[in-house]
Each structure stands twice: as C-alpha cells, then as structure tokens.
Image 1 (tube, rainbow, N blue to C red):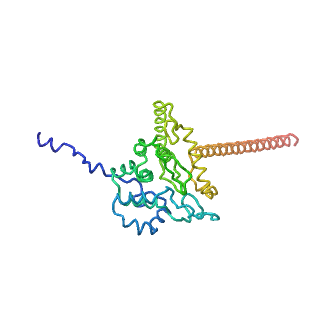
Image 2 (cartoon, rainbow, N blue to C red):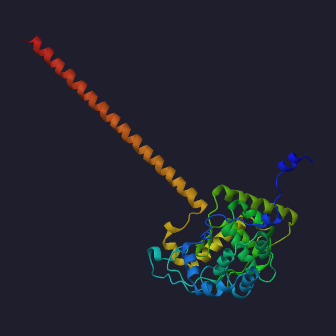
Image 3 (cartoon, one colour):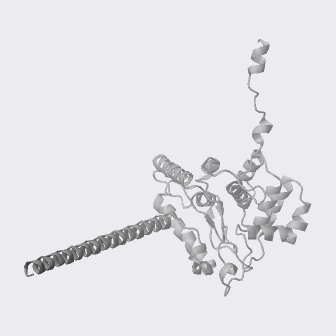
Length: 321
C-alpha cells in the first residue's frame, strides 16, 4: 500500500471511544428540577453516605438495598396544604421535603459519568427492577430526545413488575413504565426534560407502528403493561390514570393551572381560542372602519347639502333684487 493511501485512510473508532456516553442538556444539573437538585446536594445521605461510594458496582448494590420506589420525595415528607404561590405543591416547585433515595442515587450515578456499557448493564440487570428503572431514568434525563426511542424500543413489552409509587399501590410493568417515559412529561411531582414536538410526533408514530407489528405477530396476546394490546386508546387511558393519581396525591397542583405544562390537546384548544379572538378582533376592526367610513360619507353628504342650499338661497336673493 502506498504511503499516501495510508495517510488518507480514516481512523477507526476504538471500542473505548464508542463506549463513551455523551451528556445532553445541562451538564451541571443533569436537567433535574432545581429544587430537587438542591435537596439532593444538601441531604446528609448524599453528602455523607453516598460520598463514600466510589465505584459503579457499589452504587448498584446500594440501589438494590435502598430503593423501594421512584418518586422524587419520600412519602408524606412534603407538606403543601395551605401553601400558596411559589410555595404550593406545583411540579416540584415549592417547599421541598425529604428527597428520595432513588433520586439521590440517580444523581450519584450521574457523578460517575456512566459509560454506554454500564448503562446497558443497568437496563439488563436481573437482581432488582429498581436498578433497571434508574437506568431508564438516567437515559431520560441525560440523552438526546431523538435517541430515546432507540434506547427504549427493546423494552417496550417487558413484563417484569415494578411499583414506582412511594408506599406502593401503583404496580405496573417495566414496559408500561418505559412507554410512560416516552409519551409523558410528568413524573409524579416533577417533570422530565421536554421533548421537542416534531420528535414527540415521531416517537408516537414509532410506538403506533410497534404496536401494530406486535398485534400482527401475536394477535391473541393480552399484555397489561404495554405489549400487543397497548393501543393508542390504552395509551390515552394510561395518561388519564397517571394524571388522576397525581391529582390524588398532589391535589394542590390543580389550584395553579398556569404553572402546569400544557398538554398537546390543551395547546390546540388554546390556539383555536387565539384564532377565534383574532377573528373577532378583526371583525370589530372592520366594523369600526365601516362605521367611520359611513360617518365620513354622511358628513360629506351634509356638507354638500348645505352648500347646495346656500347656493340656491343666493340665487333667489339675486333674482328678487
């Protein structure tokens, strides 16, 4: 091979380079809600206990023993009743509480800057569904929205059971949990990073196509967590069910609708109302313009009538002199 050919060849990426996992968004905050992040960084559990854990495997063991739910706050630790304004219980903006071990460990994983291999190790872990769930949450908070479906597609029909609610009472499956992360912005009393509308539409189209393929391959399958029977109707039902649970546990949020993110249907209705208001304003403006033109026309008519009257009066006076 000629020397010029050797220099012209593109360098091949090593497996180590391919294993590096870039971070999307705000690298200082991991795209977490500022209140949750401040509570994590200020908690003695994170500052003292988790500070001693230096390796990926130590943190995974800690998740196995300590994580029992996936909410950002420990049950009953946020007292929002009677609070108003910015102190209300609105999507993680408020008085705070005792931040959960799950979110402390999620941020601890972030400080380790996981590799692609380590994240896949979390997703495929066999010891605890909560280890897997924190892997999916790590992806949701740190990876580009356009890559989310590719990360999650192999787990859309996973039937392993998990209960993400503090105190229990909301059992679901890994498959349903992953789908919820793809189609919903809300996560109990906080928000996931926003997915741009065009990418969200692509994700929903891919989900619908996946559902059709599953229905074709397994027509008799009946999967409660998100398999072949997970239609768009079921998807919307799960959305409503999640919203109902949120209202039940964080009822104060409903008193502050302006602080809640708009759903797509709400945005469409708001746009329709804006268009209707614009049409009404345009109609009023045209009506005012027409009224002004009519008044100008009447005024000009009166002036011409007065001029003609004066002219006839002068002509009559000249005739009788």
